[in-house]
Amino acid sequence: LAWGDQVIVHAYGQRYIYSVREVKLVAPGDVSVLGHKDQPWLTLITCHTYDEAGGRYLHRMVVQAVLVGVSDG
Image 1 (cartoon, one colour):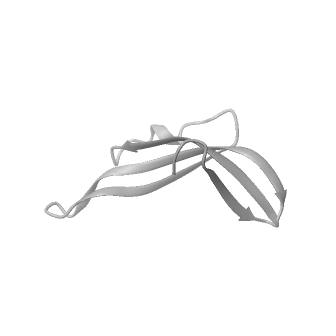
Image 2 (tube, helix red, strand yellow; image 1 turned 180 degrees about the vertical axis):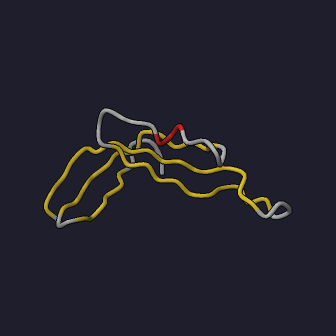
């Protein structure tokens, strides 16, 4: 995903349309990306950069998107 891409979440009979605003790598313990936002945001987090020798992931990939629309769905 990249800036401006859409993420559509189908829930409760609605389509929630989000527009990606940030994609970044963070340390596994970095919880700053979970901080409060003044608008409705979606934050997606997944593991990234597996260290086979250490048996762990070195980073987390974070995608943050702002809600831009809701429609029946």
